[in-house]
Image (spheres, chains in turn red, blue):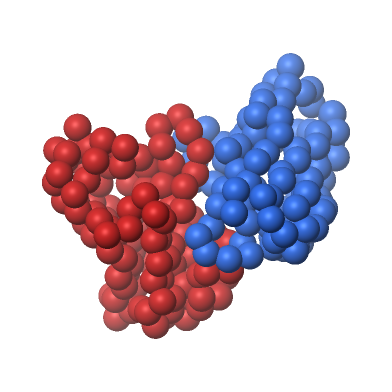
Amino acid sequence: EVQLVESGGGVVRPGGSLKLSCTASGFTFENFGMTWVRQFPGKGLEWVSGINWNGVGESYADSVKGRFTISRDNASKSVYLQMDSLRAEDTALYYCARVRSGYYRAEYAQHWGQGTLVIVS
Amino acid sequence: IQMTQSPSTLSASVGDRVTITCRASQNIYSWLAWYQQRPGRAPKLLIYQASTLESGVPSRFSGSGSGTEFTLTISTLQPDDFATYYCQQHNSSPWAFGQGTRVDIK
């Protein structure tokens, strides 16, 4: 069974930093692209960032470009989201999601974690 | 690419046929996915490539459309189906989601 477990969320002051982690199990992690999607309180979904199976080709939503950095470690079956210069409008539930193939760009989220909450206040 | 769903909220009864529309701001061919999100839960993939049902999803869910206009249909609404539904274009990056359609009990 595919499992994705996010961690690292919490309360941080504006301008601060936080690093989210997502640990995978139940599939061959190195074969799949990964993404982060966030959900604002009581609102809809926003794609944040994605990374290919080999750790390259990453991209970001305009709203986080230059502040967030995605990375992965296939040996530890984990994907990360380093979030710097955090703003109040970054407050959201952050989901880690696996796509169907090794490349995330023209893909969809086949499996989701349960999310980790980030509050910037 | 911007995605626009309608309606934003839909009230229906168990057994009803329900249709949700999603429009893309430009041609995305058939590269559209639909998700269901129940309260307090992560989204769940229902359909991809506009009409392909994800494994394990009940056959009462169906998707259609191409280009810029798409629909999600639930043929006979069940109690488990009261949830929020999102479309997402998977034609290119950055991904774009619709704003969601909440299906609640009439």
